Amino acid sequence: MLDKNLVAEILNEALSTGGDYAEIFVENTLTNNLHTSERKIKSSTSGLSYGAGIRIFDGVNFVYAYTNLMDRENLLKTAKKAALGIKSSKKDISFDLRDLELERKHQIQKPFENKSKKEKADLMLKISEYALNASPLVCKADAKYKETTRHTLLANSLGVWAEDSIARSLMHLNTISEKDNITEAARKNFGGLYGLELFEGRNLQEFAEDVAADSVSRLSANLCPSGRMDVVIGNDFGGVIFHEACGHSLEATYVAKDASVMCGKLGQQIASPLVTAYDDATIDHAWGSINVDDEGVKTQRKILIENGILKNYMVDRLNGRRMGMEPNGCSRRQNYTFAPTSRMSNTFIANGKSTHDEIIANTEKGIYAEKMGGGSANPMNGEFNFSVDKAYLIENGKITKQVKGAKLIGSGQEVLQNIDMVANNMTLSCSICGSTSGRIPASHGQPTIRVRNITVGGQK
Image (tube, rainbow, N blue to C red; front, side):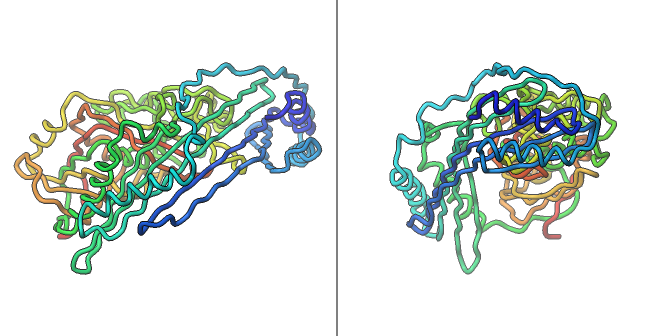
């Protein structure tokens, strides 16, 4: 993407005023989006993100500058301007840029160029049509498809030269059903590090009808009761609670600033002994996977919690300096306009020994949160508030009436400690995670779990 000699010149310019570390991140990302609604193509857009970010460290202080003018003169000018933010004595730093050997595990099989935009739009219209034809109560079906090809280069004064290319695709469907002036929505997606093979082997009619059936069934659901009760949380997107209420608290972004409830707890029992959790950016073709992070560190499978004991934080290079810890391949950013920091990739609770059916059968009374919705959490105290998209009552060990309006309220620490059953059906879901370095693709997941005595907001 850039010549090594030019990159070395830029890094030396960045170090000219006394910085002890410099890096350049170069990005060329092409994105295509399609949106169909009301049996029409609503939009077809393309975008290009092309530019470079230069970061300089002086101890734990840093300067970050970026530009989309990629000629030699401007890149050197940007490095020099960034260097003016560092006022220290000049260090004797020499480096030899060498290629970082990467295991490129996520190669696509069918390039996006194999189909025209019209062919892709026709497929989205077909999926929408499947949903609209599933029931006369379905009044709207929005299908969205996104494909991204990202080429990156990270080079730094440690001698790292890391180039990578990642392609991602995502299909999302949202349906709305209406009856007696009441409307209900449902949504579902699938995606990963795939080209057009994303759609192969999938029953798209079944996918669309499933989303439609969700929105229809909610029209007749009763309001959820409220109070403290046992909650069985389904697999897949159920992992959003761990992601938000615990995962962010384990990012060095917050830990290094003493702004996390998990500060100083390495080696301590923070969860039920049944809980083991990972952040793993190496999973084949998973939505949140990458080969190398945005600081040129190889990604890895990190065990965060093992049998309830906190084992690791997710550590980026800058916050690692503040914490006295080595970076472990989790530094990410939305694009070159953001400085990177520690972020999650594919974060999940690992499989346990129970089955989904055993958990339901052993729950006398409670709520089954089959599909989670959106929510928020505070990394400083782990407190969260999440809506439940699809829920049922559990009575005498059986799933009975569907209910709506449920909210799960509590703290990540409370949930982790109160998990007393973990199933063996872990799956991952696709999502976009927002934080200080922008919005990035991230997966979260879990098997079915049971949490004792959690606060459920609903109807009294």
